[in-house]
Length: 110
Image (cartoon, rainbow, N blue to C red; front, side, top):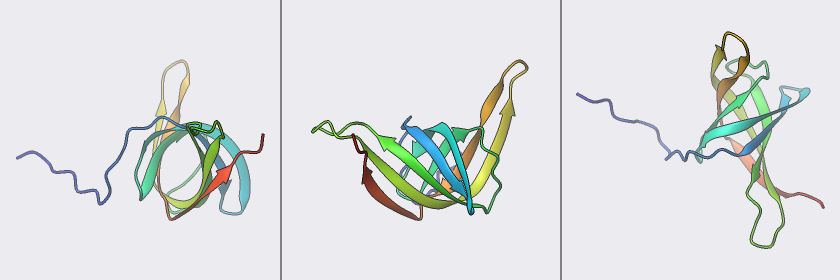
């Protein structure tokens, strides 16, 4: 019998610029890319060193609006899963799944 997806929220495969701003109380400033996104969480790639249960703050850059104004989502969540991957010659960034507990839209100042 095939396994059924039991996620609460529909996931969207979106590759958007991602910045890990803070882990706990420590500033990080690591960049990466989202792999998928839902109203309850995000899966992203990054070479940041994070652990399950750790609170994080991150920014997701959305495509430019119709008015040409860049918009970012400032988000707060918690790491729920990590998957470290390494190729033989070049390390591939880790995949990190995190909750999306709070967010706000932030306009990028030009």
